[in-house]
Image (cartoon, rainbow, N blue to C red):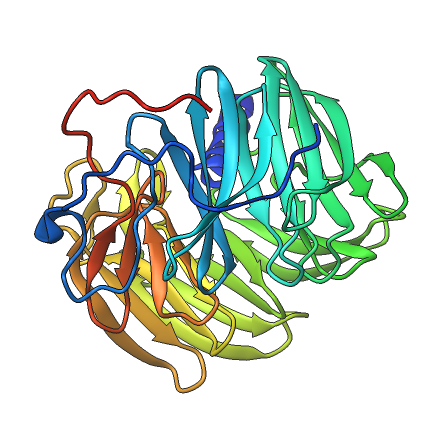
Length: 385
């Protein structure tokens, strides 16, 4: 049972991560445009919106992956067994081909500092092919990784450095460090599977024990050259994340287990910058962490919050989308009633992608919701690529 619990913890992290060849650059709109000349503005996009939806039908759409900049999204679709990645400017409506693949695209990460791309494709069920490209899709490095699932963490300041954990069917794993500049893949021994970058030479990890069915674990800083060179930063943490130079920890207070305590610290966890408490929901044998994002520009934490404590399986009161401002420790409600779904906010904090495919956009300033893809209404055929 203890080992199974460890596997359950790993699965929760993986779901958070994946749910958190050469190509030519092409300028112009998507060749698969198939939207009607007049759209029902109330259902698809409000009349006041300046946002231009994707010029693509729902049937071939796969998902939006995030923000290249505050005006430009990255999305993919599949057509006739081939997979295409496009950028899309929200205000001009212009889409540009960035990357294409014969293998299904599992996920794409966008490096916040450089705009470079990490593209994870799956040519086989037990293999991954990963590509590191610039924002135009020109490949800087690619490599094959035997795996059943992948978890990855990109260094936030150096786009050449990536940590990748390859899980196998029996949930054993290997941790790899990729250095794009050196064109090198190195296996790391003695590390937990889910890591966060501290700097270019050290990582942060939560030390989950395989033989202990614990809900909380300490955070350690470890050297990448020597895993025994480590220091304890904080104990009894439920979950943690790293945003630029800020570390967030989530705890469950002993004197009030119906709330999450969100703590924000400087990078070394020496100084607390802000502290907030929000109701939590029990989930199976532990707690459900709602989806969230962090806006670096003005240090705002955006998260879904249940309206009251309860059981996640029976909870039906809806969620508020909450903004927690670290600078003055104020809370505000952005949306009063939404479902708890994945969230990715633009660099300027005006819009957030929303939904399991990021198929909607929320305007945090106006409260407007926009569909990026028209729901399928007919069986029109798409043009061939």
